Amino acid sequence: MADAAAVTLSAEEQAVITALEKLNVVSLNNVVKYMEQTYGISAAAPVAVAQAPAAGGAAPGGAAEEKSSYNVELTDSGAQKIAVIKVVREITGLPLGEAKAAVDGAPKVIKENVAKADAETMKKKLEEAGAKVTLK
Image 1 (tube, rainbow, N blue to C red):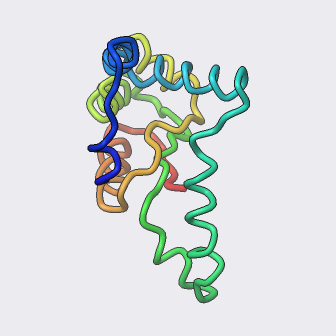
Image 2 (image 1 turned 60 degrees about the vertical axis):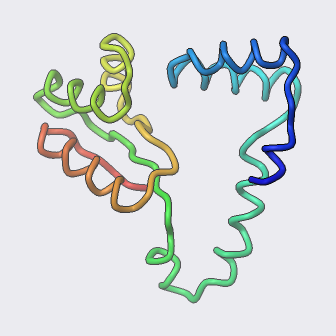
């Protein structure tokens, strides 16, 4: 993190950062996908490389216990879609239309790389609303 403090941005670069900060999660995800496809870059590659040795060195059967981040996947919205949409909005901060689209598009990952305790809390809230959830 000390290296990040040494970086100075030009006015144009700061304008890009400011514009990105204003985007919601879905829009930002679309920008990332576009950049990956257009420029052949991926922000996920360094993360996968960093996690690979830890997973490979784990004892069999202990890997699931050592996993520190989870993806919260909505597998089924259940009969009470409105309640599930409200919880999805609460968890993700998405606008109503995008939260509804996420619920209608189940199975869908609602949150990625969430700490285990937070993932369990999200799963509990969604299940109480009537949804079926999987932690991956």
